[in-house]
Amino acid sequence: MNPEEIIIAYESGERELQPLLEKMGWKSWLGVAELGLVMKSDIVDFLADKLSPAETEVLELVKKRLKGEVDLDSIEEALVVARSPETRDLSLEGRLRMERGLVHFENGDIEDARDDLTWAETRLKSVSKASRDHDISLLNKAAFHLSIDEPMMALHVHGEISRNAGHANETIAISRIQAARIHLAFGHMFDAARCAFNAHAHAIIAKQIELAVESGAIFVEISSGFLSDEVEKFADQIMDAKPLSAGETAPVLQVHPDDVNGVLEWCIENTVEGYSGVERPDLRALVMLAKRLDRSELFSDLLKSPNDVEDAMLAALCASISEGGEQADLWTGRVTEIMTLQGV
View 1 (cartoon, rainbow, N blue to C red):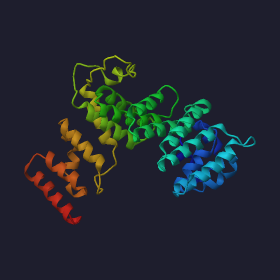
View 2 (cartoon, rainbow, N blue to C red; view 1 turned 90 degrees about the horizontal axis):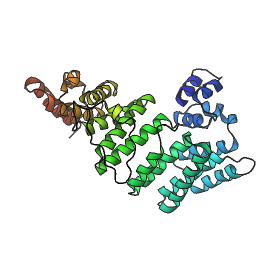
View 3 (spheres, rainbow, N blue to C red; view 1 turned 120 degrees about the vertical axis):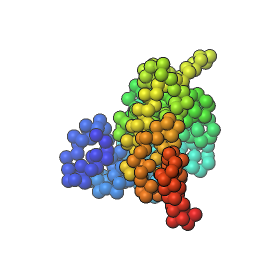
View 4 (cartoon, rainbow, N blue to C red; view 1 turned 60 degrees about the horizontal axis):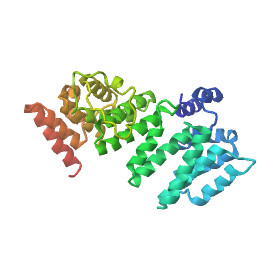
């Protein structure tokens, strides 16, 4: 159960929504109302009397942020409500400090942003650890450190998002794919592969298919140069893995071909259906990986469908993996045709 399913149930005529919220494990309707705003659903009005004064103020801020109108004054007004004895909400005070930190960052006030984001994460960890808002505060704090060229601090924050501490699977997936990219930039290949593999697994659990495809492709890209038939399954290798202490030697990355091929096949089977679309970076990445692993047969159907492809770069890749002759000529012609239609 997730907030979108509750909104879909409402749109289908269901009005007894409390059991659905309980099934999801949430106690507040605020998150559902926020998603309702994004989905432009009437459920926002339906839930209005179910929100506390502080939650109502936060929802108004979300409306302003969606319109690009949120500012420090509106956040300060909401903070007054969250801090007042009659309407106090410690969690939402943390959420609002996070919002203020983001606005400070957008305004270029780096130290004020650092103070607010740190304060918010500490408060939320204290009063609602592993909650939706705490998860968001951790991701925002990590992104802040990365944006000001503090990658090791970003990694430290991602390390706070333990896979065994009750954080949402989607949060873990987003955290691990970001950590994978940071490790890769440092040349930490085992940790990069480990984080990408975990991101892929948790994204699948969270039913975030695009994220699962993206993280799976990163895992395949990293691991394709470190294949070995002599090693155990990668899931077993990383079961007890943890960040290294000072002086410890990093494990050597070796991945069984079955793991790499299994993830690649899953990604191909679950990417966006069809081959159309002027920009298909998902297919381009997967075709390149299949070529690298000598698994071009996984795209045998695509290679027979030049007229379905609208992405010139994808068509060029298909030409490069065709076995020559008439098929390669068809793809080369398709590249020319696409570029002519696009006025290139």
